[in-house]
View 1 (cartoon, rainbow, N blue to C red):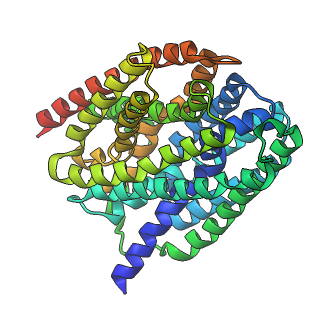
View 2: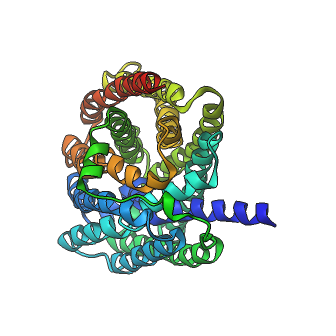
Length: 417
């Protein structure tokens, strides 16, 4: 019975960990071609709205760590999910651009402040010192599978409203379709909030007072100065920038390969299904060969792919371009299952996990501020393959820095013994 309860708890962490981001991120990542036309927005405007999310999220990451080390996870996670779903009800109305920016600012708080550090700490506690790779691999792989499943169901909604002749799709068709997709996802988030409250057990009272840590400005500053935390933050910022870039893959298919809106959405969904495969597989291997070693391989894959796409090598072949995207996706999603697994490798004390996660995340997730904004600016209003190549050329710097940061992290850990 105990093992069943533990399995149910991990399942709740998995679906809660992705449901919280369905509205602010997965919706855009998979259905961006339709969203651009239903809301009448450019990529740059979408980027500016998501940048507001990044600003409020960055502040929330820092303070969220303290909540995670003091309050029980199920209360924090369930509350965050309900607040985020309320924002979904607002989005169904297809708000104006300015209102959308306010909504994303709200989501930056609702999805992070009470949620993120609590999720990572609960996942670390679920596993042990020898299986952090598979613990975080299961978390992100499971999150990826859940997101892909929701996206797959959502991708069929346009079939109910779009006419068979793609040339006859009206603005009303696009708006109504988008409202049903948003409504469907909002309902899912509400249901997950209830399930999370029921499935995650209350914490035991066995935690001794000696395990509690006194937090003050000096203590936080001392953590900020640690080289391993600085390197860890750089690893996450570079890996997360790659994850944010996946939001352009579906529009690349439409703008460069001339896919229809429906075909581009299917391509976005297929990319989502790569996430669980890569995260779980690499997480399992990481427990045998160290997460940091595999992180180096993942960054190398991303670096190679960025060079190929950025400089248009073999651009005449759609098949080869797809293989290159496959390499990029494997590297990107592998890192999603690895970059928090190295917390154990860094020998971070369990009772300050939430605080450390909060500190690392402040820098690590800054791509929420600039990456969508950057890609939107680089692509412009009507992007062609030239704009996409410029974007991938600029992106090369991220896997390169990530690779160097991983090497630096490993050196520091070896020195510490």
